[in-house]
Every structure is written in C-alpha cells, then in structure tokens.
Image: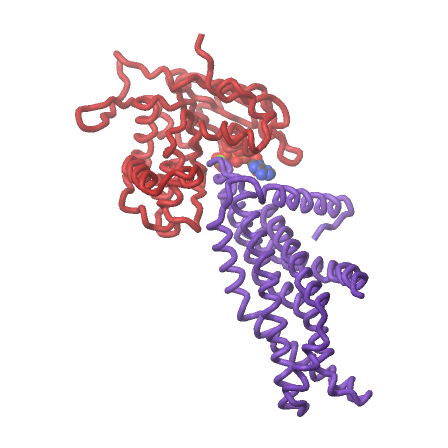
Length: 265
Length: 253
Ligand SMILES: Nc1ncnc2c1ncn2[C@@H]1O[C@H](COP(=O)(O)OP(=O)(O)OP(=O)(O)O)[C@@H](O)[C@H]1O
Ligand SMILES: [Mg+2]
C-alpha cells in the first residue's frame, strides 16, 4: 500500500473561542493534488498554515512524510519545511529584498555561492516567465507578477510538496491561466504533491480536468476525455470548519446537496 | 499598554522569553554579519544628527542653569566640573538612549510589525529561517554596539555646548571650563556612563522587537505597536536608570 505523504487527522483549531477547524481529516498521496474549496473564512488558509507548522492545532495530528509535525519545535520544523514550498495568499514577498534575493532566499540562507544562486534564480524565474524582473523590487511588481515571484521563491529548492493559497485570486483570466498551467506542469511532469486552496471554481476545474505532457519543445496541455481521466486530483469542500464533500470533480458536479449546488453556481 | 495585571505579567514574561531566545542564539550559527552591519549603519548614522543637536543644546542649557545655582555660592568657576559629571553620568546616556528609542525603536517596531501583518514573518519561517536570528539578533547587537558610541558623541557635544555658553554668555575662559570638566571626571564615571547605554540599548531593542512581533489588527496595529515600543522603552530606560545609578554609585569609591 502507498503511504500518504501528507495526512491531517482530526484537526481542531480554535481562534479565540471560535472553532475555525472542527475535526478535519484528509490525506494526500505522493504526486496527487488536493483542491480545497470553501467560502471566505471557512479555514482554508488555516489548514495550510498548520501543515507548514506556522501554527499548532489544538487537537489532532498532522503527518508530513510519516512524521508528526505537531510535536516538533521551531528548530526541528526547519527540516520538515525544507520539503514543503508555500505560496501565501498575499504573496508575502520581503519588500526590503530584490526579486533576485527573494527568489534565492533559501539558497542565500544555505550559503550557496553567488554564481550558482544566480543561475538557479534565472532558471526558476524563466519557469514562471519573469526573467526580466530579476533586479526589480517587489513594490515595482503587479499583483500577478508578485504571485509568480512567490511561486518561484517556493520552487527554487524543488520541494516535494507545494501549498498554494489562492494563487489566482484577483488576477485576470490570462495570468490565472498561466499560473494554473505552471501548477499542472509541476503536478504532471515533476510529480509534485500539491494542496491548492481556492474559491474560484473555474481554476479548480481547470486543475481537475487538464493535464500536461512533455511535448517536443514545450509542455503541452490537454483536457481529459473518454480515454483519460485525471484521478489524482480531488476536491475537498470546507464549510464551518468541517469537510462536507470529498471526491473527484465528476462527483462534485453531480452533487444534489443544496449548499454545494449554490457553491458551484 | 497592558490593562489588567495578568496581561502585564504575560507581557513581561513574553519580553523575557524573547530576550532569552535572542541572547541564546547570538552565538549559534548562522551569523548574519551583513544584516548586523546594515543595522549598525542605520542606527548609528541615522541617530547621529538628532543626538548631536540634543546633546549640544542640553549641554548649553545645563551650563546656564548650573552656573546660576553656583553663582549663589560664588563658585561659577566650577561650572565645567558639574556639567561634565552630569553629562557623562546621566544626561548623555539617558538622552542618547531616549533619542534612539524614539528614532530606532519606532523604526524596528513598525518594520517588524508590517512584516508580521503582511505574513512576511510567516513566509520567512516557511522558508526555514528563524526570524529571531535573522531579524531580532542583528537589531539587538547593532543597538548594543552603537548606543555607547552615540552616547560618547552626545557627551562630547554636550560639553561643547556648555563651552559655548560658558564662553559667550558667562565669560568663563575656555581653559578654565575645560580643565574643570576634565579634572572632575573619574574612570568610574566613564565606565558607568558607557555601561548604561549597553543596558538601555539591549532593553530598547528587545522591547521594540517584541512590540513589532506581537502586532495584531493589520496596518492600524502597526501604528499602535510603534507607539507602544517608544513609550515602553522610554519608561524602561528611565526606570532602569535609577537602579543602575544606585548600583554604580555603590561601587564608586
Ligand atoms: N491569527 C488569527 N487570529 C484570530 N482569528 C483568525 C486568525 N487567523 C484566522 N482567523 C479566523 O479564522 C477563520 C478562518 O480564517 P482563514 O484565513 O483560514 O480563512 P480562509 O478560508 O482562508 O478565507 P479566505 O478565502 O478569505 O482567505 C476566520 O474567521 C478568521 O477570522
Ligand atoms: Mg485564506
């Protein structure tokens, strides 16, 4: 049996006196993607923060690669965090550092030499299509560019797990499309495990219905059809701190539940 | 400011915890030498002008007041001595620290505060870097190392300000003023006068970092944290000055 690379078990999280997460359990297998959808304030970002160890659950356990991270202290968490990349909802770029220093942050911290950092930063900026922005400051970037720089910063050490917190929120369809394609490519070509948080159904369904293949010169994107159905990308719908749906897009679309129907409309 | 006694106790506990963590990680790798140097420049160069100005005028006005009092004893000639001792022991360290608290403490709190509310602190942790080592320790070390230097500047400017009023207002000769000033100073005065800014520097850096890092409530919270950092570190500087002075005087002769 394949072990899940990420497992959230009976997690409860209170902020002040309110249970933001109230018994949340799910698992993500290696190379799979979990799309977490839910209304604003339903606790989506909170789940990602708990997985990253930025905050602790009040109850329950979180296993990353089989290791319970809820018992680790800040120093022990550092090696778990190496395996995970996170794109924050508001990008969270360091505004006192240039794009180069932001993207290369992890490498600078590890003391990698300058040339190597420069090469890697350019490579990963190329992947998100922002080579030209390397010497800019975060304040000079548009929202969509910030999001892609944040993606590049998380990707530079090629983590096995990626957490995306609404990476397309507030962006135009073309930029959103670009970001979605990057995420699909990571899933299908690099087998990166992903947790994708969004409340935009369009983006969620793009991820659940399209796949990437290595073409001759470039990555090609196709939509699933009668011959191929994407099985590794599943939905999880959060409502008032509880999971009210878990399954593939086909089932989600056919759901008879009133709340789900309204959510998809 | 903390309202209830429990909140106040918790606050003290949190500050002590941050201090312990920060001092504990000073000698642990990685060392952010570059960040320390950047902060030293920011604090040193940034505070110089304001400290020189306040030092000069405080010295000048202190001289006027002192000479007035001394004239009733017919001892105006001793003005330099009294001014120098007050400056080096008390006014230099306290004024310089208060000025730095206003300028640097507020800067630290607002920078860390906005980093916190924009999730940059979380992003840093997510990238595997300890914000205490990367942000708090460099600010602590830079403040501790620069404040004594800034204090020396304040002392010198104060004595210069005193010289200015002595010569142009009180008609004391520069030689008399400077000789009296120089003769009055003991090593213990200098030692105490430089020990104080070390303690004040550590206090204001830790308190300001703490205020910044526990910011809540978005951008508005950053303003609140900034004010709290300045108020709290100023009060702590003045209160701890009393205790430090008592200790230093106990060891003087
Ligand atoms: N640090 C915090 N302190 C207090 N309450 C918090 C904190 N973080 C989150 N909350 C509360 O927890 C709830 C869930 O927040 P969360 O950020 O996880 O929502 P979300 O699902 O990501 O929403 P959105 O789609 O708007 O990003 C909200 O009601 C929020 O007010
Ligand atoms: Mg969110």
